[in-house]
Length: 362
Image (cartoon, rainbow, N blue to C red):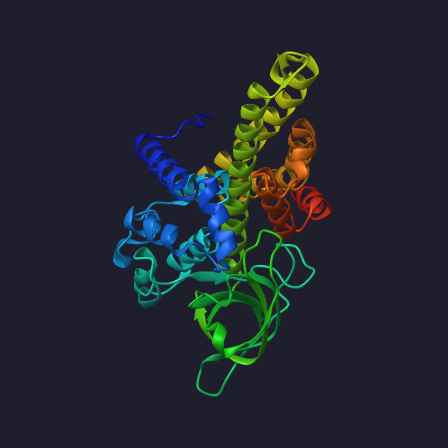
């Protein structure tokens, strides 16, 4: 299988890398953290102007109509620069609505392409992994609409979102519903990444149905969430690897650069191998989703989720170790990469959940 990006995808990667490298530099991240703002509005606007927020939106919403591979390209660069913007949540939610929603719902995504709104989703319930049944139920009201009942897991950027996409059990099936977060109870839960989050309590909250309630749309959200998350984690590890190799080349001990010590090169090679292993799952899973090979994609995504939940965290421990004491200092950039990787491993459900998924698939 050829995992090289085509010309369009490579141009998109270059655009995203240049923009994030310029707009999410370490000094910019530090300034954002001191500001207390929920996300970097300047970076968000820059992403919109560059067309990155609209790249994977349908054409009727002002987008370019690109697919899962291009989505993974953008999210990997966001992870590599630990960019404090709701790009994962917004793009995954929008891609799901674009795939399963009505024409009107797709057209309503247009403000996202302009950076005018944020979207979010709640793909997992409290204490549940992505593959578990939703903790929320949907009931039809007398007018043919739906109301939602239950509690979500922590939803990043819930308070900032125009709409939150929530899976819910609806009779004998499972469906997706768009909810205005202001109509639900909201308990703020700050994330370890420094991003804002909240748990939504739904007590008869109106929900707008997205697609049929046969489980297909909910499964689509799960797949896109997994694909987007492991792409982000792939970028996180790539960014940490670049930071660590730069440090090893310049830090000297015993009149030699650390990179010249064999024990160090062996350990950093293991970090590189972990990144390559995850990349294979990321690109294979995204390509199969783009081709409609969902059953084959499930296996790739499960392997990628396991790698992101265990192997990547071990690799980041190695990066911290190779930095010495500065590796755990919050004034040094490496801590952001570890916090991001740990958070996304929790989002996926952890190692045991991934092993259960892989076991069920084989």
